[in-house]
Image 1 (cartoon, helix red, strand yellow):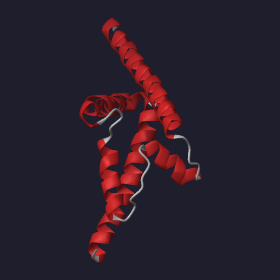
Image 2 (image 1 turned 60 degrees about the horizontal axis):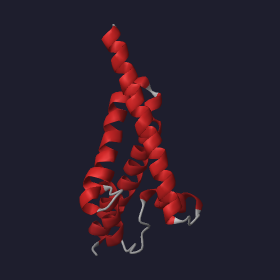
Image 3 (image 1 turned 90 degrees about the vertical axis):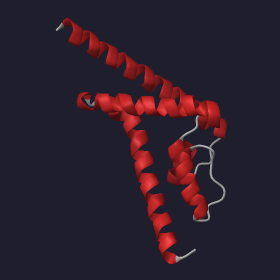
Image 4 (image 1 turned 30 degrees about the vertical axis):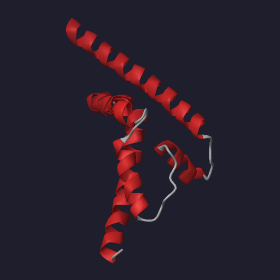
Length: 132
């Protein structure tokens, strides 16, 4: 590969790492800030659409951001990637090579809890607005 192409893919790799990790953290904690809850709701729904909607066609838990990132990393020579981005983060941050099924189960469990909390907060807000 030419140096410019390698540089471009290296920058994309960093971009996806920062963007995707930040997005995940926002899905986990964005509900805390009341002013961010509409955007948080949209982020949670986008995640659900990707995992469950697009997942019908590409496999349960499909994430287009992970696919794009893996494609970039493949072009940089990383040919063996974990099946989930969460496992990738855990492995990158700690070196722990946890069981794929365990990581997936905890990820789905946490997402379902966040999804339920997000819907609950939206319903509570709607009821407060209706009463006013």
